Image (cartoon, rainbow, N blue to C red; front, side, top):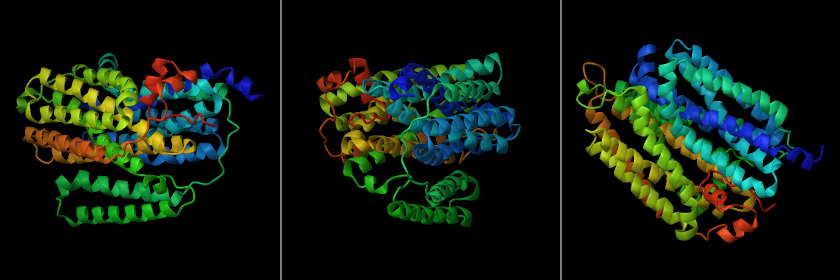
Length: 491
């Protein structure tokens, strides 16, 4: 079958990829509003139930680069089918989980679904007509960004109509259908990249992340000065140094440390790390905060559905300003947009720390947070893509997204440690824990803004006129500039 024949059904291929990517992105945050419910139903503590989110992010951090590499080596279509099958199995396992341990294992299996990201982008670059690549990649990237916010909104209606088990049954069924459709609809790409997976690097990456996250999450219980916590932190440092050393020597590293030496790349990745900590901490703790009964002296006693609606302004503004970010980057430079987005994001965290007595205050904070996150996240991809050769755009942008996920897993664990460090007799965290936690996140994005000034000024990769000549509409240009990965169209 010729390449042109394969590409004749690229629209159907796109629908299948969009369904798989959308289900994965929803699973990032769909459980966040029900963490208090899971804590009660599975008879565990708040610090432990946070691992339902952390395990997912940790697994995605490790498996995303691995599966992207495996797909390049043996075929993206067959690997995508396997990834979707595992994502469905993880969802079904979570749906029947009756203990927190099994739920965390199930979420770790779901995290393998992170491989959907590089595989979907790779299939689009290989199979779509050249003039359609950028637009398709941009829309998938937008789905990944917005899906996380939609998960917070949809959780309530699903739980109210059915129960929390269906938060996993529904995505699991959708992903299973996507896996079957992938097998029958998406052609196997003839493009192969010889190489091998550095399993030693993968083990070291997972090792230092697990050691660090375990130390941070258990420190309130064990004590920061305990031998266990100190030992885990030392182990994390040793394993991280060994991981970086292995990656520097590897001919085909999971995360290219040589590329990280490029000034525009490492500075943008530093911003992504800090911003990831803020984003996933919001996913995990804003719903819990607003659901806290008023009897605790704070919170609003909101239902799961109401907590989703309170976060909805963030989802809306994140999408709007994420798409506008491309045009703003063309006009003012992506570096300026990253700094502006970072600076704007300080204010909502400061509001949450100092003024959270009324729902309207929280809603304004969420609205502003969506503006800042939308601008900054989208502009980062422009900088990374412009800083590397065209043949490395996918690798560089994927690395940026993966570092954001690593930041999210670390940030969620640190936030959990701070919030649960002191509790009321009822077992609920004291208000001071949230105040300190939100203030800490304000400082974190403040450092992201400062790191943005370290990003060197770069020439915009593609101006609007050139993009239109390549067949892209104004809307596609805006979305792609605000996407996560930009495909290589220069080949």
